[in-house]
Length: 114
Length: 109
Image (cartoon, rainbow over all chains, first blue to last red; front, side, top):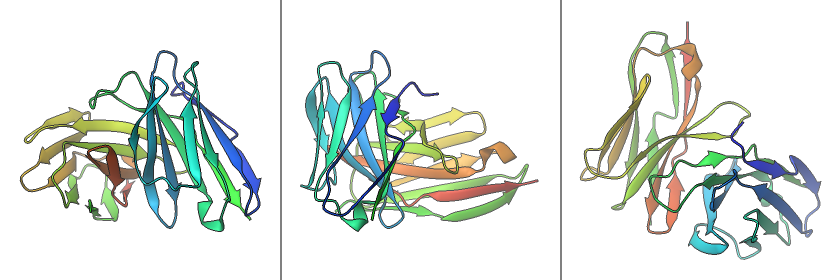
C-alpha cells in the first residue's frame, strides 16, 4: 500500500458527461501528479500541483482541469467526456518538488465512457 | 517534440539470464525516470537519473543514463520470475514528461 488513495475505483458514465476523480496524497506529501493510461495513447503525464499551486502541465486537454485543496487532496475534473477518455487515471504524490523525489502512486480510477 | 522510444516492447527471458532494456529520447532532457507496472496494478517508481553517467542499482536492476547519446538503459541481472512486469521509462523536458511505450518482460523458469 503506497498510502495514496483514489476514489472512485471504477466509474462508468456516458459521453458528454462530467466526472470528478479524487486523490488523497500520502501524509506529509505536498506534491500531487495526475497521469492517464489508455490503450491508444499509453501513459501520459497530465498535471502536477505543489502545495495548492499548479507547477507543471503536460498533455492535458482543455476539457480537463485539476486543483489541489488546502488539505492537499486533489481533484481531476473531466468534462464533455468522449469515448476516447476511457482510461486509467493515476495520481501520485511526493514529499517535495525536487526532481529526485520518489513518487508514490495510487491504485488508479478506471473510467469507462459509453 | 520530445519523443521517447523503448525497445524491445516485449521481452521473454529465462531465469538466470541477463538482459537490457533501452530507452532513447529525441531532445535534451534534464531527468529520466524508470517505473514498473505489474499486470492490473498501479505504477511503482524505480529510479530517477539526473546527470550524464548516472548509474543507480536496486537488487537485480541497474539503470544508467548517457545524456550525450540520449539513451538510458535498464539492465537486468540474473532474472527471476518476480521481475515479470512492464517497465516504462519517462523523460522530463521542462515541465512536461513523456513516457515510452513500455517493455513487457516475462521471466520464465
